[in-house]
Length: 132
Figure (cartoon, one colour):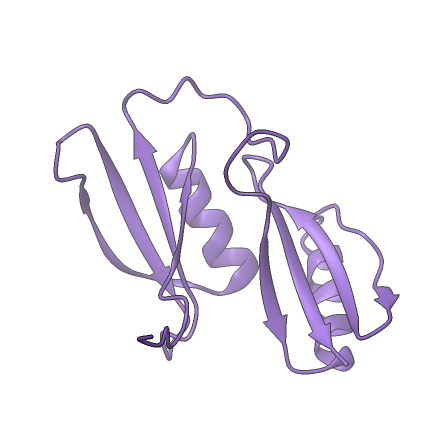
C-alpha cells in the first residue's frame, strides 16, 4: 500500500473571501501564497499558509453558493483542528483569541488531549489541540 505523508491543505468554502482572508491572516497569522479563479471559471480561491508551509488553508468562493452559514450537522466537513506543541501554547492561543474578541471555549482538558474551540466568520468550527 502506498503511504500518505501528510494532509497537504484544508479547503473551505466561504461566503466572503476578502473577509475570511483578513480573518485567517489576523487570527492565525497565515499569509496569502496563491490565488486565482477556479478552473471552470465559476469561483475563485486564496491559499494561505504558515511561513514554513506546514499548515495551508484554502478559502474558496463558488458562484453557486447560496451564502448559508456553515453547519457541521450536514454531510461533509465537521471541523478543522490545528495542533499546538503543548498546553502552554494552547493557553497562549486562548489568550490571543480573547485579545481579538473572538468567542471561544475555555481550555478543555480531556484524557490524552486539551482543546480550545472557536469559529470562523462563516461558523466553521476550528480547534487548537494539544496532545498529552
